[in-house]
Image (tube, rainbow, N blue to C red):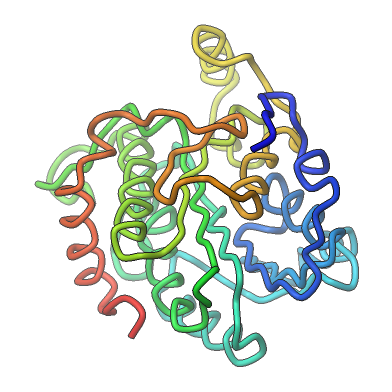
Amino acid sequence: MTTYGPETTSDEVLEGVDLTGKVVVVTGASSGLGLEAARAMAAHGAEVVMAVRDPIGAAAAAETVGPNGHLVELDLASLGQVRTAAAAITERWPRIDVVVNNAGVMSTPPGRTAEGFDLQLGVNHLGHFLLTALLAPALGPSARIVNTTSLGHMVSGMRWDDPHFRVSDYEKWQAYGQSKTANILFTLGLAQRGYTAYAVHPGMIMTELYRHLSTEELAGMHSRSSGYEPGLKTVPQGSATLVWAATADGIPSGSYLADCQIGEAAAHATDPADAERLWRWSEEQVGQTFGS
């Protein structure tokens, strides 16, 4: 594999790559990393399904991607809407080559999805779990699934006793960390079932994901990041690892990726038993057996 690093961009990853005929689903493709990943892969021939919460508001984003970009409404905070979106996608695209579960929220005030899930766990993991389960029958043997996680997963493992903060006081960073751990454990569960799947930490990039943070919190995050990361990335640099995971050969399934390289996730996010527990719990929460 070609060696890349934190400054590698999505266009550099895709240099010489032909994605003609590939169908790629990208959630959260109206801005930031999702839009850049959609643009880059569409520019190399892929048909990109841009799954967004507000298709009307995302019209300009679709124009940026060009004729290979196709908008589909997806609200991950509603399992009913996830089902509607998945049906619309598979009806038009019966074969899917890549699913990039990129959409997410971070450090939100206390909130609930339509089903009463904690908002961060519901959007970042459970909505994507259901979407992927419903799209799975359309995935071919060489298809891959890319889940956007974060270094924030180190803040918290799964809070099995109270994952939705129905008893304990809500703590926004713990909720976010739990949801990002879930992204990694979901990736492991997929790999254990024979799917090609990757968990991607894009790095620290100032996108709409940070809209719930105060100026002081942003400054603190940037200061802390200097101890273990090279600092802020541009959007094309942040998207590079997503695109690398979606297209590069030779990466072992189930890997945690950062800076276009294989990284190491926290121990609480790599326990096969927890991956199995999360899988069973997620199927119960969303009322869907995976791939059926």
